[in-house]
Image (cartoon, rainbow, N blue to C red; front, side):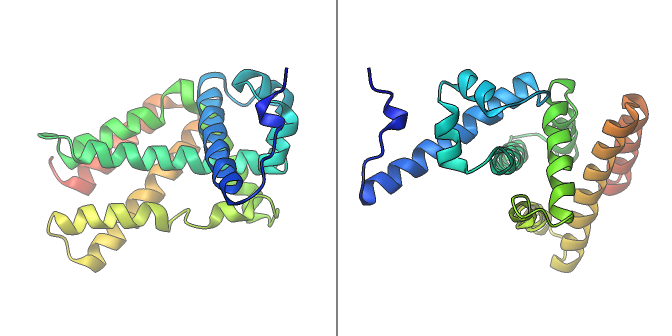
Length: 202
């Protein structure tokens, strides 16, 4: 029996199919990491879990390190999509949307994803070539929707950009604090105080 993952049709259609399959594998990998963490993660183990050979993971991503970068990017994209959906929820204030996103980000079951984010971030800052692409859009991809939401609420564009950057930096800093200290109560209290100051009495 032929494993269809090991067949490589040629031509333009093949490139499109490869892109689709690559995207599917990234999403499956993110789901696996979210459910099982990254401890002892190997291409063979991951491939077995998401029903693809490790050879095909290398074909699509080149290396384990590049696959980890793609997992981080996809995870960040999911978080941005969640925030966008929360902001569009009728009757949900921006502060409550932020609280719900924070609850999702700090879910203990997803701690592995946050550790992976900071691990890959550190590699990128050290100039590791497989990780450097993650720096592209790491701030800008978050700022644009955050600024747009602030402007839509009536904020001056310059003030909106400053507030958005402050909010992004604070959330990432507190996530790192939580991973480093494990002080969930203290970090949650700090976030609630930040949201009180950021949104006023809301």
